[in-house]
Length: 147
Image 1 (cartoon, rainbow, N blue to C red):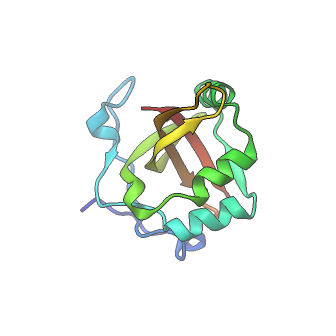
Image 2: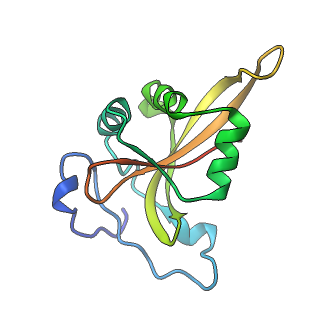
C-alpha cells in the first residue's frame, strides 16, 4: 500500500487514494522511486467524464508534443482513446514530470491500436499517462507513445 497524503477536498470523488511524493534522488529519480503502488489513483469514470467534457490540459513537454504530432492526434483522438479505456487496460501508476511539477499519473495501454497513417494500418500498443489536476477541474494528459 502506498504512503498516502490527505486527499485534496476537490478530489474526494475522483480518486481512490492520494499518494505522498517521496524525496527523489538527484538529479533524476530512478524508475523505482517514480513507482506508485496500490493500483489506479484515479477513478476511470471521472477520467472519462473530464475527457468527454473537453476538460483536458496538455502537459508542458516537448516529448508529448512530438508524440501527438507523430500520431497525428488532436483533442478528439485523446478523447476517443480515453473513452475506450477499461480497468483491464491499467498498467501502473507513477510520478511523471509536467513542466516543473511532478504529478501522480495512471498509466494505461491501448492494445492493438491501429496507426491510421500507415497503409495498411499497423497495430501497436500505445501507452497513455494522465493525472487529474489537484483542483479536480481538468485532466492533465502527460504522455502517449508506442510501446
